[in-house]
Length: 308
Image 1 (cartoon, rainbow, N blue to C red):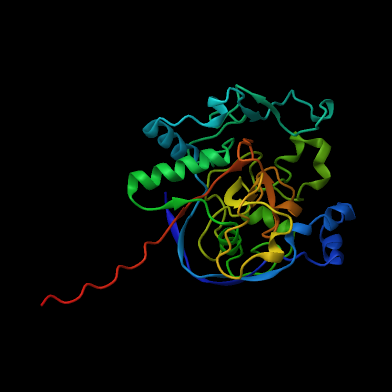
Image 2: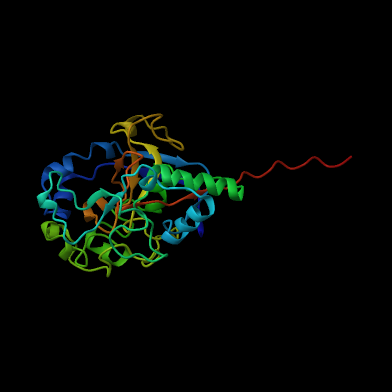
């Protein structure tokens, strides 16, 4: 894995954009979607006090496969006997009670098979938060450095890379087709029910794209938005931002669901914003959800006293 050093610094985290701006930017959405963003408020300044290494790319299928083969780890979609979710062109969401976009859980779907073709350089998906933790712990034991999921604050800081706009490139969602793999005209024909939410252009990929297919942000990080949702370390709480510490917040001490960030190849532009928060149980596996790792920078050792 290639890691990029993210410097220490301060940034403005969260904050719900003005409703008038949201209505103008996303005219196809009803107002309730804007007023439901309570967990993005209040906006607050956060200090990331220590630099850290963050994966330049999302963890790939090939990297996860090497981990499984070397460690003997069995992902939850295999050990619990329920499988995962996947794309099936014969599956119709309108015929199901939940209206879910994907078929599952079924044993035939897992990180090995999300229902669409993936090469070793595509982001691994259909992995749980617990699977992501297992990879981080194994790498830490194997290499002698601490690997972990980023905190939610570290993730948003790295995504924004010094910006305060809806996206790192600005406020225009149509610009996503140049820098991210989200729901657009390449994917819309496969889900005609939601076609009105697709971007006007095409990013060239109906499903996941090889990592690094689009330009990096200012910090040199690829796919912080789009391609695959990324698990982060924190528990989710709608009201956490109101009590969040100003320096290096770690999230609530307990909870029932873990945060995921960044959107995916199937995500509408409204939900692929830098500040949008989503969550699932740690056991959730889905063909949109993957991961990215932090490698901590070891503190400098204290200088030895001179020999007598």
